[in-house]
Amino acid sequence: MRKLTAAVSHHEREIEELRTDRAFALEYLKAAFESLSNPEERGGSLLMLRALAEAYGGLGAVAAQAGISRESLYRSLSPKGNPTLKTLIAVLNTLNLRLSVKSSEEVEAASGQTTTGYAA
Image (cartoon, one colour):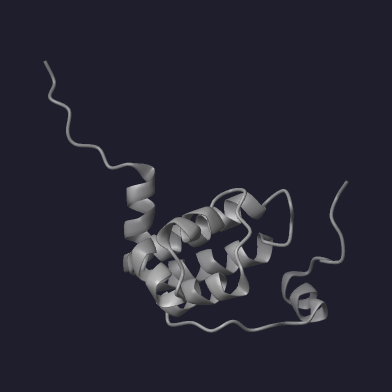
């Protein structure tokens, strides 16, 4: 009989990779923020932000830094969450990052895609 080795969940592996590969974490964060404005992708984006918070300090530490309860942070970074700017900035602060803004034209030029609307 073959002995099974301990398995690592996808989520645990994702958190570990985010924690150890800063370049990956930055690209992951960019993808999360880029899709926040698309209603069909928003839930996944919020879960991505939750994973980043878990990887860099944990939800308890991020909540404490933001001055909100851990439960509130869990709700905000859930698929149906609606985080405040304060919450989003707290997640960024755990990564030692700051929020910046680009014009739609800059984004379109960089990606070669239009960002002015959504497919029906």
